[in-house]
Length: 248
Image 1: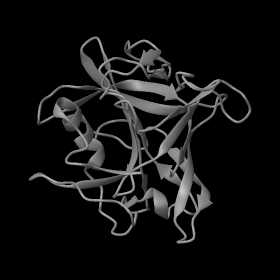
Image 2: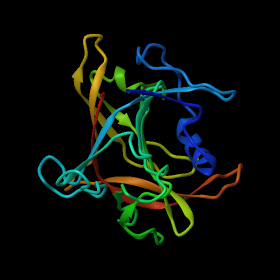
Image 3: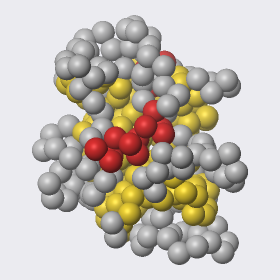
Image 4: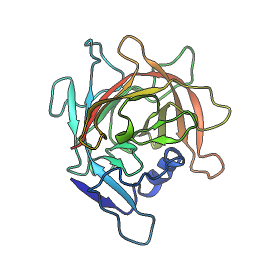
C-alpha cells in the first residue's frame, strides 16, 4: 500500500529530520507503484512497510533498543495505521515515526544512558513515543545513499538514528555518522537483504546494531533550534538494535 505525503516532517520534527535527509538522492523507479505528493512544496513518495522491532538478538540476549510488545512477545510489528508511519522513501531511506500519535498507544524502549566510560548525564532508559522518529540509510564508499531496494548484497555502512523527546528537549541517538566536524566517530549499523523480488530489488531487510553481548557506540545530541548549530553533542553511549522491515 502506497501513500503520498506533501512533507515527511511537521514543524520542529521536520527541522530535526533535515539533518538526516541532507545527503539523499532520488532514485527513479525504486517503487514502480508509488504515487507522487500534491501541493506546492517539494513532493516525496513513500511506500508503506511493516517494521518489526525485536527485544532480543538472535541468541536471545536482551537489546538496548526494544519494542513495546504490543502485538507480540519479545517483539512487536509497527505498520502505517492509527497515526504511526512505517515507510521507505523514494530515496530508499527507512522511517518509523511514532510522533503523529496524539497519545502514546505505541512506543519503543530507548536506552540513551548506557554511557561509554564517564559521560554527561543523559535521559533515562524508558518507553518513548513523543517526537520519536527512527530512521536508517546506507551509503556507498563515496557517501552516496544506496536505496534499501538496491541492497541485494546488504551493507555494513549504514546509519541508525532515533529522535525522541524528554523533559521538553529533543534528543538524537545516532550511529553511522556525525553531525558536527569535531564529534567523535560512532559505530555503524548493518542492513542485510532477506528477500529479492522478480525485478532483483530487495523487499525484506534486517537492520542490526551490534547485539546483546556487544553493543555499538552511538553519539547522543540535543536539539538547540538554532540555524547555525542545531545539534549539540552530549556524549557517547551504547546501543544495540534488531529490526526487520518487509515490503509489504
